[in-house]
Length: 209
Image (cartoon, rainbow, N blue to C red; front, side, top):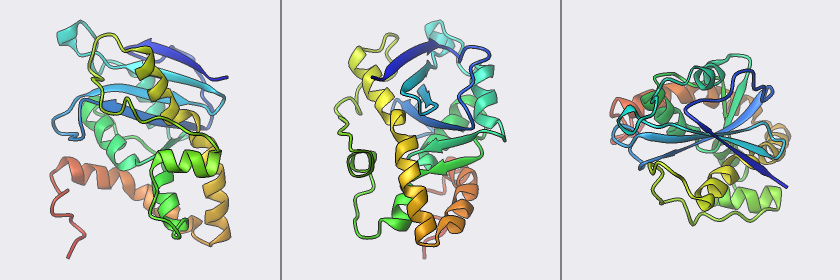
């Protein structure tokens, strides 16, 4: 049975989440320039989700003053495991002022090896690779609320609780299909891709015709 621990402002000092940490974010919207970072979810893959609520000074919080969280996100010895890392890295850099690295992205991995389908969302990966059905009902709720509901917390936790299991399956497929190295190179580029998004190079895409 999974557990959820909500932390206001920062992770507790001394918390060790291991060498690979699943990470996700919740924001006020899908524009990292405009929409503030509200929540950062983390899991060691042990069935526990740690949720850090980022509360701005205007609401009595500490905003980007979360040194333990930022140390973890930038620790070169800890790999951060995301689904659609491009958005989360941009949201974290805009909200906390740090570049998250090194990273792995299950969405990129899925697109590289699950070429038999066009369904690469987290919901589909949880179902197909982890045998778990997750709800996306709270996806568009108000993540900037001072007090989050139990439904929001459960939804946010589900975004990180299964990423380790999904990555284990995808990594095996990348090895089998001979695409692990190209995935690694794509992951290394992700912080730069996120920076380009923050600079306004989303549309048109810098790599489009």
